[in-house]
Length: 226
Image (cartoon, rainbow, N blue to C red):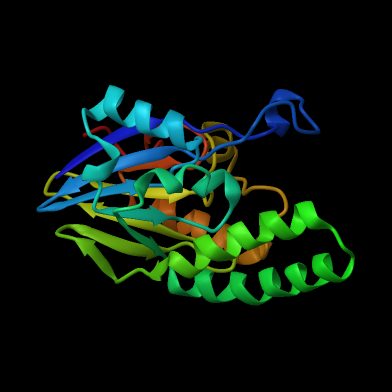
């Protein structure tokens, strides 16, 4: 099993830094996991050209070598570069996939009625990506399991990497940054705040190492050094 951070993500604005509105382009933290014959890329949030170049810089892996792309949630800041991995299987949590489909179709219908061509084109792209995504199995590869972290979005799922010496959890936006981790806070605008808090607590309880949704890989501060 190998885990490597390909790109450290960022929030479009960070309340802990005194920011109240977007000041940068947000994108998710991207991770690469190699297990058995599977090469799994998680949350390709950078644009296609950038994510392909970063993947080769950080891991020596070409985009066409990726076997699976996993999205922790369905959001443009999470899947922005997914088109670079046309040969891979695209995966997302089944509950997330189901929760997104109907709202997207409703927004598309409204945009078409209003004659908003730009929005129509964007929504059609979103729907095409969602249609291509399959519901992820409980186990993506040996030692790599789906881990529900519902709340920030209705079906957000992380990935649990269970190794002999420690357990690593790819959190997605369930635990966004170091500041959120230390302050015990979930992202603003969560779909279900109460559920997001429960998922946050579960992530802290189970993992020795956390890969944060918009930050780096960190040791769980509530665990003893190992």
